[in-house]
Length: 99
Image (cartoon, rainbow, N blue to C red; front, side, top):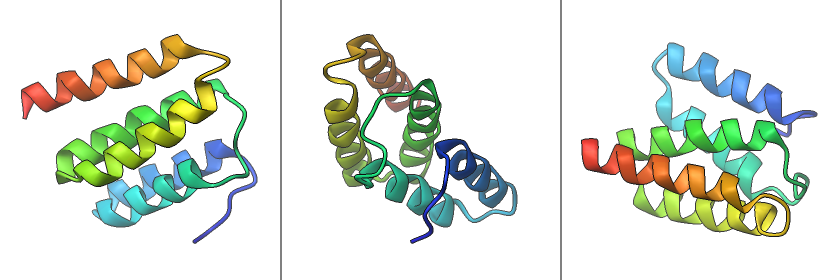
């Protein structure tokens, strides 16, 4: 489990892993960041991370990962930005229908 100084670095690392075909490692890196207690304040970057995370979960058919990530994200943005959670869940529904 690698720890990242900034959430942007985790997203960048996940993109690199996806480009070389290591989707499972990319998903794990994002999952570790989302479930980490270090990033408990909502940031716009976390929303971008969740978009990529949900995309990977749907592509790899990892429903449990998606559920766990959404629960953690709900906790983070519940008091600050509920519309962000709504956008992420809408993306999940849209991608789920497409596949």
